[in-house]
Image (tube, rainbow, N blue to C red; front, side, top):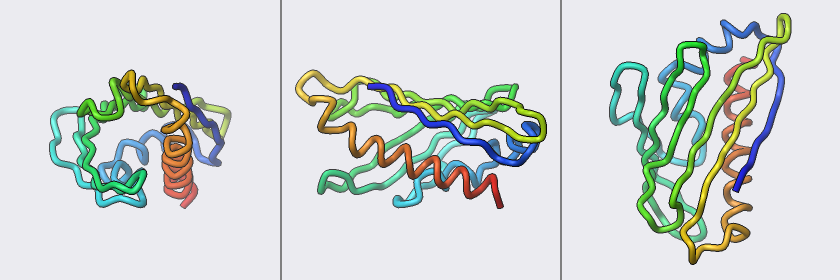
Length: 139
């Protein structure tokens, strides 16, 4: 499964990258869940989020890696229930005094979990992440 979205903000790339790299930004990407940073190690942050999806409570762990050029790569530590692999990225592209933000999710579900059953909730998650990021960057 591959989902992506793109939006522009009226902020230079360097300023945008600083906001994306703040510790406060990461938990804000999961607005409907209780999320905390559980480990800081160099340019990597590990988050734990408590959520409710498909009528069930759950806990997910994500690792975010901040790259030197201001971009972010992340992955879910998969527990084997739904996802075999789930990765994502936040890319920044300078456009004069604006920045284009590209958020992408790529994942493979377990063999007995059809992708169409998870596509809707994942699109909703991507939309929430994008809205939260946009709000932080436009403040």
